[in-house]
Image (cartoon, rainbow, N blue to C red; front, side, top):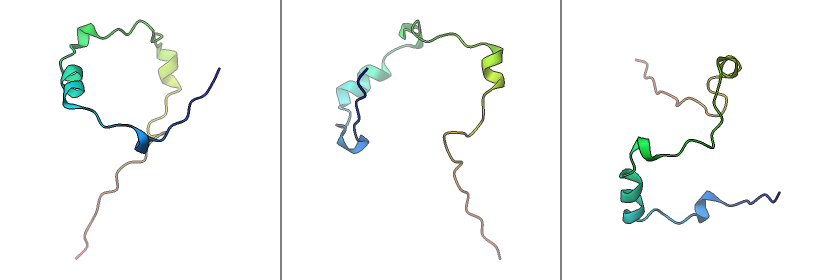
Length: 62
């Protein structure tokens, strides 16, 4: 299998037509058949916040 690398900065921006087409797709029309089902056992191993850091909130002190 070949791995393809690209930079997000090299991606072209979405056109107005592409955004409108994506927005018009209904949830019922999305094909989820290639996604394997999850079980309660899968969720027992889940970890919240593993891949993203929470946004920092600023606090002022007087």
